[in-house]
Length: 341
Image (cartoon, one colour):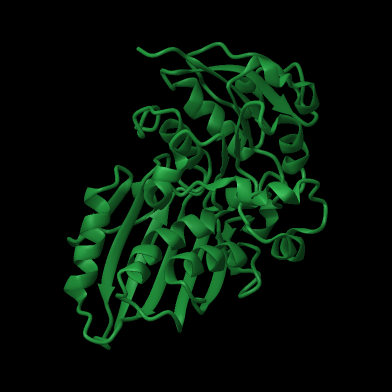
């Protein structure tokens, strides 16, 4: 077995940080040497996150007390606008895998419009690899600075990027209807919004105004070379974890259903964590929860010039922590699925 890599997780007691801790504690090539928190210190991570772990891990410490000289890699599971402060300290010293939005966008003006002006390292925006492994694997190899995509963009980009690059769908009138478990809103989400007595709620929010839209636009434009026009309607479900994006597309002239199937079969066969379902099996949250998989399924439209695609991920795994570890594995020359099966 190759040598163990020492890692730190800052923001380890949030939903994503806990997921990272759970995955990395079982990774055969990783030793967790620091678990950071903003205010929950000297606590076992098992107690803080109600985790059952086989390995004994260090007690939590303040994020600001992390000594970068003690590790090979730091995972930043910190809020937007906070992560960049730590990046400035560690940049060019150790590997940084950032799970916030602070380094996903190429244009500071767009970042500022969507996330505010509390970014102290805008000069580093273009120095991070966008960590969507299925499409940027070559760039991830040996990369020292990785920005992990958001959960909604992951679920949307995986099916749309290959369809656009192969000129199978039109680049306008795309409708994206996404639904997420409430863990995507973080620990401060008020559960009264979705659970009251015996009733469960369900609602959309920030329709066509969600902060992830600029990230989706950026990556679609890179592939398509021109802007891609879409509507985006996200929702919160009374489930803890899971995400489903239902995407309605217009086919390019002359494109048939079989062309879409061939494209997704290719994507499936070339990527460990993509599963294209073509039979009558139902694609639902139970298929993806606690996995790093993205499940794709295609449905016919009564109008043969259109297609309906369903993309399913676990928002905490493929939408965050699992994808971060997938990027880590690739960047370190390890088996892509290590620790994720």
